[in-house]
Image (cartoon, rainbow, N blue to C red; front, side, top):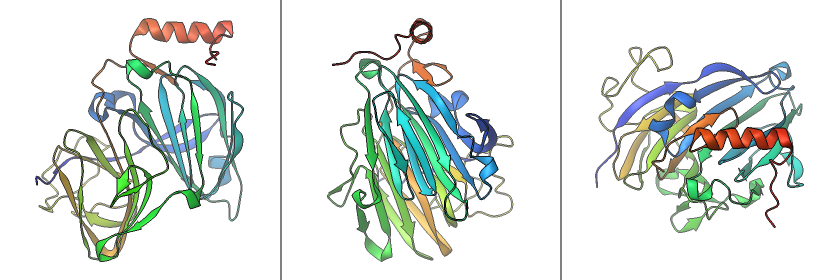
Length: 302
């Protein structure tokens, strides 16, 4: 079984989004072909409510899926499908925008004011760009926890581990979204599908993500990439992107490590992207924004 090597290691860039939310954007437009079928990954975490309280007021999406995972804090949401509620600590919102959704995500101050969460955008193929929108709100107790070998714990948002299926199913890109916790100084080998895009985002702790433990064996570019001349271990708020292969081999450091593991089947289609809308052609983008102007963006899918 071939073990995947690291292709690149990335750190997020400070970015302001929504009505004034300070976050770190790890990848987006310019990286789209390299992360297919994924489009964007944002890390929003702060202990200062002024960094996030203005939130993401009403805005449209078409042609994609947005996945929001809140580790700490609360985010109030509402959408044009009539869904409303609060995403709380340990919960997930998986929204398939399809033909069109208008929604809002507004953080609330709770507890000590800390908010920590992540948003991932997944693309839809041309055959599914205009499917009826779908919303899935997943509570913490709906996400199974699998305890593997050597004390490794895995929360399964999407995908299957040791025969246990996560709550999100029937997604066309065949994604896997796992929250993995490895105790100190432990080896972790995990099978992944050959040909799928695979990446890991470190939340806490440090570890080696390549069996060679070679800090110079993968691409380092510009300020957006982690400076590995200081140490070989990879730490928090860092994205590891893999080459192809059939398994991962990760070794935790003295404090253990926790990371998000994400994978999906590449779509391999043209991407036409403007703001919150991602289609295949510029003409489809023009149609989407004309629909917004005319008030016909939300389709009658019944």
